[in-house]
Every structure is written in C-alpha cells, then in structure tokens.
Length: 439
Image (cartoon, rainbow, N blue to C red):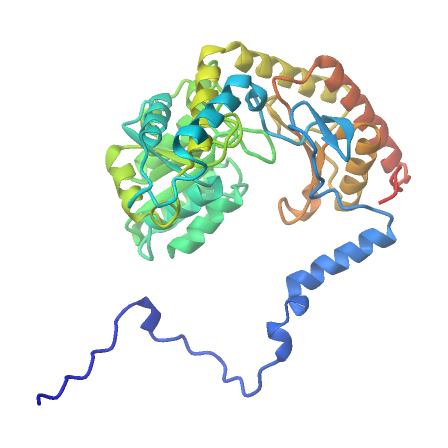
C-alpha cells in the first residue's frame, strides 16, 4: 500500500512569523480581566468623579419618540439639538411607508452578502441615484457609514502607500488608514501649505497617496477650500477622498454637498463618501466615483464583501428620503436660513462658535470638559437637549457643546436655546459649577 504523503503546511497570513517580543516568564491574570483593562479603569474613575461632583452622564439617554426638533426623554419633551435629521425627513409619512412596504415584499434582511445571495433590485436603484448626485459613473452602498470609510481606505492602500488626512478627520478615516498598513501622516486642519510641505518632503517615497478631507466637518461645522485640495492632489498625483457625511442635504443650493456649494466640478474628486443616516433618514454609507473604483470595492472592501447587504427597509427609506430632498428643495433653503439665524443669534449673544461657518453644525466652545458636561446638564434642566463633546472626540482644551440645526427648528426655539446658553455660560464662568438637577 502506497504511503500517504505528508500534508504540506498551509500558507497564509495566519502562519506568518510572529514578531519577537520580550520573553514573558509569568503571565499576569489581570491581563484577562476586563475590569482591569486600563480603558475600563479610566471610565470608572471618570464615573466616580462625576458621582462625587453630582454630575449625571449625558450619554446613552433614552429617547422615547422620534428625535426631531422635539424629542422625549424619560417622557418629558425637550427641544432637541442632538440629532442630525437635517431636513426632517425621518418623520415624513411616505419615507416610513416605503420602508414598511419594502419589508412586506423583501423582509427585514437580505440575509446574505450581496456577493453571494444578498443582491436585490433596490440596491442598484439607490446606487444609481447616489452616483447621479455626484455626476459619477457608479456607487456602492454599505451597511455602516463608519465601515464605509474603514473598508474603502483599507482596500485601496497598502504598505507601499501613504494616507494623508486632516487633523480633524473623523475616527473612521483614521481607522481605515491604520488598517490599510500604509504610512500615515496628518496635516493641520484645512492647511494647504502644511499638506504641501509633507508632500514635497516624502511624496517620492510612496506609490499611491490618498488625501482625505471632509466636506463639512462634523465637530466644528467648517468647510475646506475644495478647489485648493484638488489642485494639490493633481500636482502631486494623489487621490482625493471627500467625506460628505454631514454635507449631503446641508451644503449647496439643492443639497448636493460641497462641490455644489463651492461651484467645483464633481469629477475632480476621485472618491466621494457619504452616509445614509443623516439627511437620508436611514442607516449605512456609500462610495461613489469611477466604475473601476466601485467594482474594485465590491470585490475587495471587507465591509462590503463580508457583510450582509443593506436591508430592504433601510434602502427604501433612503431612496424615498432622497426623492423628498430633490422634490422639495425648500427644505434645504429653510435649513440654510435657520442655521444662519442660529449662528448670528449666538454671535450677537457673545457665544463662541469656533470656526463654524453658519451651516447646520454649530459648536458652542466651552474649552473645559467639566464645564461642558455641566452646561449640557443645565440646558437639559431648562428644556434643551444638546450634547457635550469632550476628549478624546476633540482635543483636551477644545471641549464644547455641539448643536445640530435642522430644517424643523423654529426661530423661537433657537432664540430660547441661545439665551439659555448665554445665561448658563455666564453662571458657570462666574464659578457656579453645580448642575441644576441631580445626576
């Protein structure tokens, strides 16, 4: 009987040599105890400090109704500035009806990756509509906005490449750059000269270079000079990716984002990214650009290939919300006007709105984390829901409240909120730090 040949060892990333580390002779049991994890211990310290300071956590508050300009928290109604339903489409009847009808026809899930058995007709309809917004050849929709950035950047670059992103870029951009294995550099916020300095010094060391910026910065409400970034990417033969998560529905006369706002040719940007969870009242993300880019991502982006496809109700809601946005441009105009009113009112009241430019994201700069949390709690006590943004989401001395302005907000709601912020900031600044309601 012939002897069976020994099986060859499997080859793959899981069998690559393990990097050498210090020889650990004895393992500390605490390393497998989640309560001993340094990040958890830090959370506990913060919680203990908050308790001793009579501060309740402003996070994970449960809303009992649709969160529009008005929301219900613990059965009490508040003027809400914590939700990014910019055009108020989350309560439009036909958006909900479209989601319901899609469930009746297709179910609540497509139950597979689109690569195998999860492809449905509505996916391509939505992708075609999104591509048309950006005058692009094609688009791909993902089930998560965060995963859209992570998967796209990770799929396009490797250790021979370089990712350059704005210092104020979203976490998903940073995580995608890290996962890609490419070299990573940040440049000072919106600073073209700083970006060019990096490119001059090291562009020649890398094959591909990806520059990533946002159309409307989610923490600060300002915009980049898109034409300047296009110029620099062309001169240094790089890709330019623009995250439009907070720009769709907000910037531009008809809500098509920063290119429409600044009168720039859409085709000059290599990769447009956006989300379905804000203006389009759904959940998920998208990439749009050249057909080759989209085909590559549909076969190589892990968040697309190894994930279930976008569900029928989520897709139907996004499609119908897009219909409403395009058929009712007055919503975009109303948002623009009320946002401008909010900024003007705040500035007249002496409130520091940072670098915000008068669009739907309005920061109220406090520059102290504890004061920001106290301010948010006191505002809740006065009937206004607005969230503090503190480290690590923003730098330590850049703590602020962030207000999302929507087309549903009224001038009286804005005026009342600004007056309350002014009064509470004055009280906090004078040393009256205690929150008005118990935590």
